[in-house]
Length: 112
Image 1 (cartoon, one colour):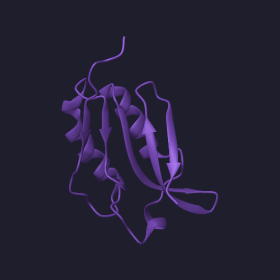
Image 2: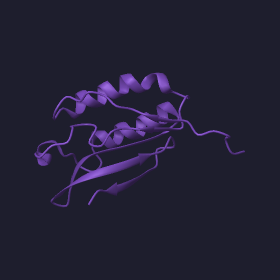
Image 3: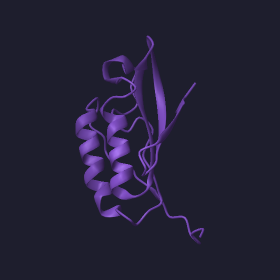
Image 4: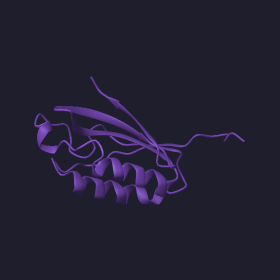
């Protein structure tokens, strides 16, 4: 059966510049009450670091801690979770959007 409603949550938070672990922790606290209450959770662009001209300083490997965090968060909240962060792959840095599903699968899009 298809659900009659789609609940979307947009989340904004003050970021700590260039501190991905702190920012993931802050978002985890804000998102915890949403478990089972939202179908889609949308995080800000570059939600782990803030927009920066020093992207290489905070870029992560493709399978790094933020991807793992997004997957765990989607599973824990039973919702799709999407947001972008900086990724370093094959010698280049990307602003990568991840769409994480509750089953652990995900899709990515690199902003051009």
